[in-house]
Every structure is written in C-alpha cells, then in structure tokens.
Amino acid sequence: MSMLDDLLQNGRRVSYHGPWPRAVVDSAAWISAALRLSEGQLTMLGLWGERNAVHMALLDEQADRTAVLSLEELQNGYPSIAQYHPPALRLERTLRDLTGLEPEGLPDGRPWIDHGRWDLRFPLGQHGAPVSEYSYAFLPVDGENLHQIPVGPVHAGIIEPGHFRFTANGETVIRLEERLGYVHKGIEALMAGVDLARGVQLAGRTSGDSSVAYAYAFSRAAEAALGLEVPPRAVWLRALMAELERLANHLGDIGAICNDAAFALMLAHCAVLREQVLRAAYAAFGHRLMRDRILPGGVAADLDGNAKAGLRELHAELSRKFPALVELYDNTASLQDRTVGAGTVRNELAAQYGAGGFVGRAAGRSFDTRRNLAYPPYGELTFDVPLLSDGDVNARIWIRIREVEQSLSLIEQILGQLPGGPVLSDVSPVNESREGVALVEGFRGDILAWLRLMPEGRIERCHLRDPSWFQWPLLEAAIKDNIVADFPLCNKSFNCSYSGHDL
Image (cartoon, rainbow, N blue to C red; front, side):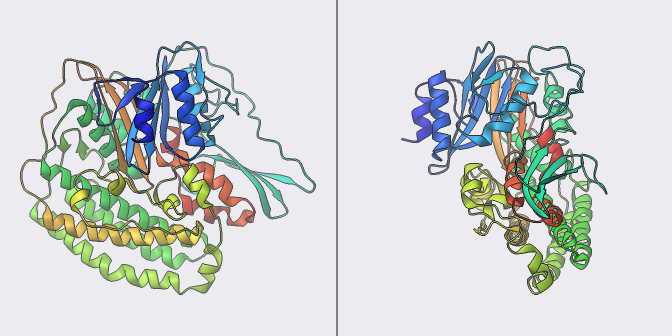
C-alpha cells in the first residue's frame, strides 16, 4: 500500500475530483502527512486555501502516486505544515495573506505577498480592511565585519521586480534573503466566477514565458473535472507546442547565463536560434508565444502542410547549428572557470524542496512529469531525462543543453506520428460541482493546476502553482559563500519566475 493510501483511507473521499483522489481529513492525518514530508517519505506539490479550507497536493515518488488532502470547515486556522517541513513556509505565508486563515505554529509570522498596498485584506477569504504599508523586517545577522547590500526591487534592464538583501563579509555572501510579491496580479481572485474560456486566458498569462504550459495544465485540469475526451490530434499538437516553448526558453537561458559570465558571443548565437523558434511558432500557430492556442477540449489552431514543413526546416537548422555552440561552451576555459562550482545546490535540499526542472535534475532529483506521471502523448514517445548531481551553474547549463537535444528529438517524433482528425471537442457543463487537477512539465519544471467548477460550468476556485515556489528558496542557499559579483550568474542559471510566483 502506498503511503498516500494510508493517509487517504482515514479521510472522506471527494467523489467528483479527478484524476487524483482527494480526501477531507482531520488534523491528526494532516499532521501525519507533515511528518512524512519532514522525513522525506512524501514530496509536496502544492499548498493552497480558500475561505474555510486548505488543500495540500502530495507525491509519493517511490510509487509515482499523487493525491490531495484537505482540511475543511475551518474557523480561524489549521496546523502549520512549515513547522515540520520548511518548503511549506512561503506557501503558508501566502495562504494567510490571501485567505486570512492562520497557520498555527508557523515559524515565520511575516506577510509574504501582501505588502500593505492592496485595497482590501484576505481577497480569497473573509475580506478585511487593508493595512497601511509597513516596514518589512529582514532577518537579523550577527557577526563582525558584516555589511548589507540591498538590491532591487527595481533592476537594470527589462526584468521583473524583486528585492534581494545580501549580508556579506567583504565580497563573500553570508546570507541572501529574498522579498517577492511585487507583481501580484490577483490571478486567482480574477478566476472566481468566470467561464473556462476566460479562465484559460488568465492561466496563460500567469507567467508569460510559460504561456503554453499554464494553458496546458489548466485545460487538463478542466478536462479531468468534466471527464472530457480531447481529440488525438489536439493531444499531439499540445505536446508539439510545449516542446517548442521549452526549446525557445532553454536556448534563451543558455545564452543569457553565458552573457552574465561575460561571454556575449554565446548570447548572440543562442538569441538567433531562439528567434528562429519563435518565428516558426508564429508561422505554425499564429503567435510567437503560442498564447491562447491551447483550450479546454483541444487547441485553437491546427497545423497545415506548410507549417509542418517549416517546423521540419527549423529542426534541421537547430540540429545543424546547436552542436557547435555546445562545443564552444565546453571548450571555453574562461567560461567554465565562472560556471563550474558556482551556486551549488546540495542534492538533499533539491529533494527536500521537490525542486523540479533543470534546478532539481542538475542536483540529483530525477523527476519529470512527462515520464514519472506520464500524460498523453508522452507515453508513446521516446526520450531521456538528463540527470547530474553537481548542482552548480555548469550542471544547470548542461541539463538545459541535453533538454534542447531531447526536445528536438521529441519534435521530430511528434511530426512523424501526428494523427489526423479534429482538434477541438465541445465543452458542455455538468449539473453538479466538479473538481480537477493536473501536473504538466513546463520548461522550469512541473506546473500544478487545480480547479473547482460550479454546476453551470463557471470557476468557483482555481489554484496555479509555478515551479519557482520551490526553486526561489534554493537560490538563497546556492549563493551562500559565493561572491556578490557571481549573484547575477547564479540567479540567471535558476531563472525563477517572479510573475508565476507572485500570481
């Protein structure tokens, strides 16, 4: 029996939740789950709330099993998970900011995304009067010859806002503390009461560089709730879009990381390849970022013969040019001197935080939703999940390089096996409340989408969880004992999403 089965059997199963089981449990089972998280027996996939309930998505990595546990009919609070399992800390601080539910025993009582600038408190709970802007107390550090360096929230160049507070001894970073939440958009509040057409639009705008992945996750969650079958051709076209998005982002990241190590030549070459991917996406699907192309029930754009030929040309071009860039990176000693050994994430931390994507796979965590919790059509495709254990900037670059190669292979396979037929099914509301959940592999890692539909088909509650929630804290650990000047390099090698984190 899976560890999750043991927890679920003590709760009340929710019959209209798909495809994972969800059970309403008591506080004892909730704490038992927290203890299993703390012992590494389970991995947290998400933690969110609503006015009188909290929900936690869990993964048993040994059994590749997933489930959602819930506490309902809450009055004021619930037992904090973070007091046992540190990765829950920021999620619980956010949950309290949004709902007003108090995590009892929370180790850090400071707000997280509510900066005292909203026009109301607890937008997803019992609304309260807003508080005036407050002074945020960063954690104290004691010691001789220490100084603090505040960076942001406004940065040079085109970059989203985030504040980084460094405590350093000379040039060596002793502690980094992040403060985020500056680009909170109220996505989850905007979702309430809208139909699926509007909901998928909002989902695709949660983090612009992951438009496809978010719409993909949202649509699969909605389809799970409704029991909706997607046409086979649409299933394969979705995967094609997801791999094109992965390609574009990985190529951009590889060049940008090298640029932060003062090797602008790699940035120039990778930028050209990324631009070719975006142009091919536009020619194939009518939008460079393929925004609003994935919908509940299928896709909004089909692939004609000319577009298919264009994607084959793109595949041939990248297959010809990319290996030379890999060799350039591997044989440039001055570049390796900056990336090897910098910003190291320990393997045990990556496992504890359930870090997805290249951050986790560069630090020994072999998890990829496309393989471990395979969804169509990936079960019919052949691909490898690259894995390294060094956990440094260099390892994160190499994971991206190998994933570019795998995405090129997947695109070739998809184009060769693409079935014919329609690309969109009709979406009909059901006469009862339904819930659905999905996990989709974006370029940063796994994206979680959970929603509850009202009987008329409108959204009652939707939660979206970006991979960055479990990666931003690891950046704080990775930069420790590095020099301040290496922070841009380490930060870019993570490339966490501000917007996806801040909702």
